[in-house]
Length: 198
Image (cartoon, rainbow, N blue to C red; front, top):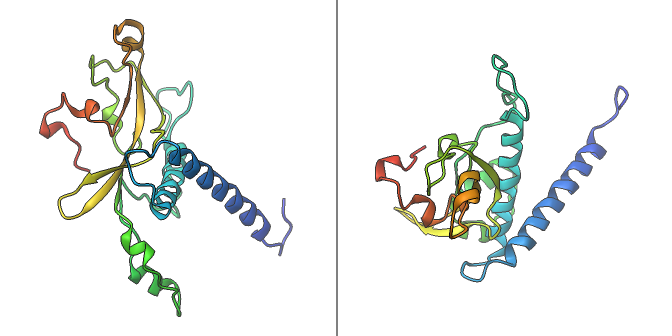
């Protein structure tokens, strides 16, 4: 515990180093599976940082284990913005507003928007696309990172979460019981009005 007048700087540096390490690890893990998708380091790094943010939001707003009825849901502190599910890359205006002499680089101009398909934004997707069971659990981010998709106005990316169905795991003959929310199989049985528009 810090005394009066002591700075939080060392603690912040430790936390930032830890987060940077997690981001680097995630990017390296994604690169192993990017055979059919681009592996632009800036795009991967940006997506990995967004994953860290979404993980934080999810952890801060989820009741874990044996929650009792009547308990209030955890809420975000008012200092923490609730962003997403669509994340737009920073513009030159962001750089100009954060520094009197911004270091403007062309790299961020080429970043594509990222849409996150995660239970923190879409809790109603917790149904098996194969058998429609709600006996499912969310099981982590897709191992290959984001997918590139065609947006209405420009190219975009989407990053999903994996859903495992216990009923399909126990009864499926073909062994399919794990579905990524960015996989076409997850959406093929849904009507257009069932696709979330948040």
